[in-house]
Length: 161
Image 1 (spheres, one colour):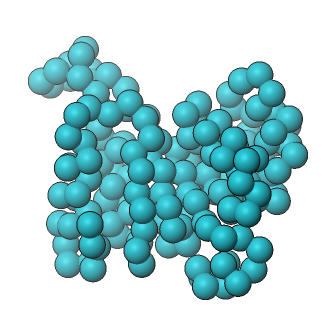
Image 2 (cartoon, rainbow, N blue to C red; image 1 turned 90 degrees about the horizontal axis):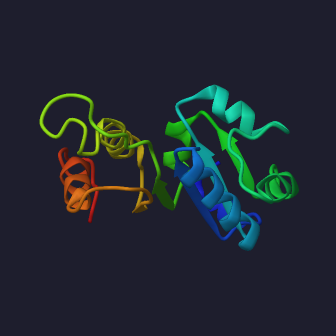
């Protein structure tokens, strides 16, 4: 479904969150709960995590989260492993991927490992087809947004910042 058809139907905005962990999953559940006029989709590279979000056995525990998810899942809150489609359809993308502590190289044991974040930035660059707002939602070092800008504009794909 393209954006125009989405907006002609019942949703005003299409929000995507890449990363279905504690930060992404719970934040998007609350956004979907508070904004029923928005379609909110959470995608993750781990299909088992997506299967858990789509079950009665959520992959994380927060008090009251299961009631919220169960009340809106399939209405305006969706969970999927199809990251590329999610990016193509989204008007707003929250990047909430794992940023563990580096285990090797400069900064090992102290600095954030941004490999998943960089992979996600490249996926967005390669799959986005129209204007999209990108929000970093997680624990990221200072100037990470500048690195995102460099990745998104590295090719001539009509990305405008």
